[in-house]
Image 1: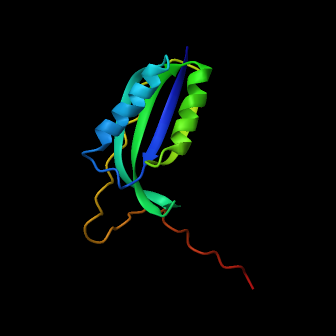
Image 2: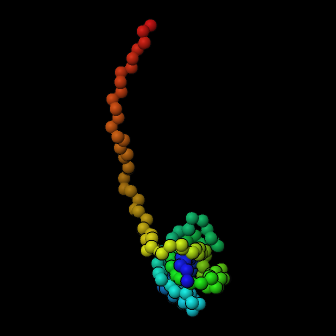
Image 3: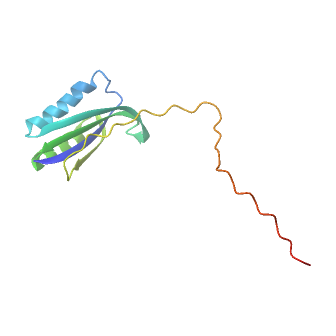
Length: 132
């Protein structure tokens, strides 16, 4: 079995209460077809860079799993037909997986004016005048 990573963006209509059962259904789908889910990481609801199928935001879920080629065909088909999925990306990983990257929370907006300090400049040399 080979290692794969899957990122799914679910429609905003899938509430935070319903998302765990949707994720569990995806994990069960993979398990029923001979795959093994090794990690699931919810990245949360994020604003999309551009509208996808009329949605401005979606819930991101990262899944790492092991599986065979026949599983991938069924999974791709299922994701494309699912009404809950806005977009997905499925890739095969070449090396053993590292822990999933944590998505940091957005940084708070700075308070007050920002003053940028420049390094101290060299004193200017006096201008030399040319003889006339």
